[in-house]
Image 1 (tube, helix red, strand yellow):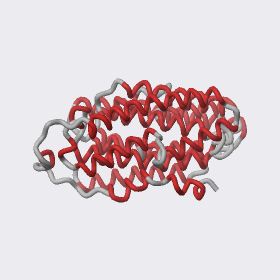
Image 2 (cartoon, helix red, strand yellow):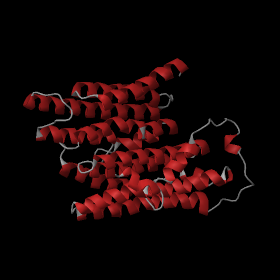
Image 3 (cartoon, rainbow, N blue to C red):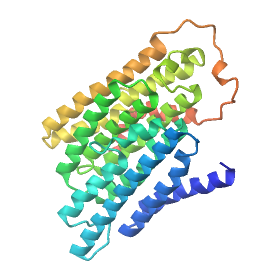
Image 4 (tube, rainbow, N blue to C red):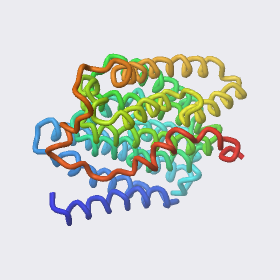
Length: 344
């Protein structure tokens, strides 16, 4: 792909998200989502490989169906209320349809089946974009409509997503699929808290993006696509793999790392709302997610394969591009002490 084409596609991707995030009219939000979808399709199908084409087709069909549902939901709302304002979806049918459409856009359970397959069919860099940047536009729609969406539907979707994210990731050997199920679980936490405290949802989204970006960058640098690849990464850079261990523990939500903060705040609010059963399901599901994170840390750092001293063999043939890991990792690990400042 030529630099000019790449620049145009990346600008379209950014513009689509910004249009959706800054719009107050449903039609403009829909246009932003469509721009976003159409810009990512060439990026996914850039590799001339049947698996990449399949991933692009699955992504397009899912996102097009979700966009159509959003448009349908906004038309029902406009028909009943005479308004196209995003912040006031007054009709219950419209609200439930919108919730399902956003769940499909994000890859929340039970409409999650496309996400692991699409990530597995693309490159690591594209998987990073789909797991982070592509979540921003639907999340801003949830943030704008949080007061009017169905809380019961969101809590149900949230609990189911954390459960599916935990069980689905346990049996995986591909790192991209593991990150996909990790994404489903984290987005489940955000969906569950969105009707009560949208600001905590956005805080969770920021921390999730920092942790996921850090982890993907380390996977890109070490060219680790499977668990088997991860067993030999210690010889490349012990320091980076130690940071990867801490990032995985942060994704699992262990204190005193950043990932503990949003889970702590969300559980606190759910208990205050007397949602004990939902809280229990989500906490138990997190243990499942923690299990496969711990398995990954065990493979990478605690069981070292017989190897020669530090070698850059994987990096010899292709120089590694500079990455902002030195900025991302401290943020992904050390946010917890400033919790009171962020929750005022």
